[in-house]
Image (tube, one colour):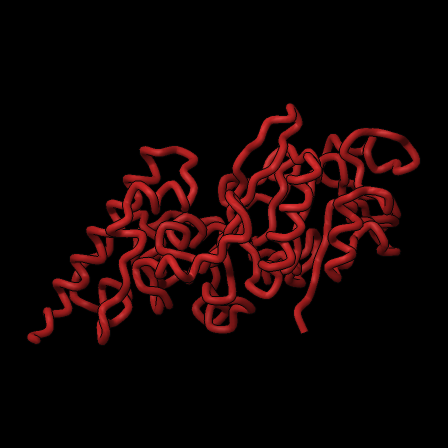
Length: 309
């Protein structure tokens, strides 16, 4: 069979990416499952044997569409994964490798992109941009991550659909934990990707949003957070703040997010407080997670992490 010239493959990739972006924009907060059901011919397509993965469009002699951070060097996936790659735990609870619509959403925000690609795509200062050298030594790849769909009860007692991105090594743990929380009608105010807050962890915490993956340093340091590996998750963070004792020369107590200071006093009784009697705490501990509320120099009451061996 005669192979198609590379320029036609690139054009095909552009068309499919454009359709996925338009679909996402028109559908608002559409989940990956919704997208797949509406676009089966795209979502469940597989790469033909011998078809190369897309590279930076300029390498093929074409110009890249402005504002499309999903089109970057060495994207490791075909245009979508096979449906068999999706692991369904229970109805409404599944996880799968990142597909192009998800990669498009997170690249340059929760997942960094290089200065070279940002310039190539004519992007104006994406929030998460690294040098080419830093990109070459990233601690996590797209292949290491999984997109997760869950159900949860919000503060009104209504069932909502939530999205998470996590490391594949803890995907089984998280899907089981959130299913148990759901069965017990444990209330969580919001479960959205940090990208919906432009990668701003503080904004996400102020909105009391539960989130997992975000390639960023620990607050106030240059060290990578476990969130950067997709191995940490923050639950109802406004009611379970991050507290640092004796911070800075003045030795003051630092509490984040602003406005949550009243909830730093764990001797008080209030709703949505995570402590050792809380179901959320018990489930995460049963799955081998460390709780930030047990730390010494600081307390991160919202935070659970598990580092794969």
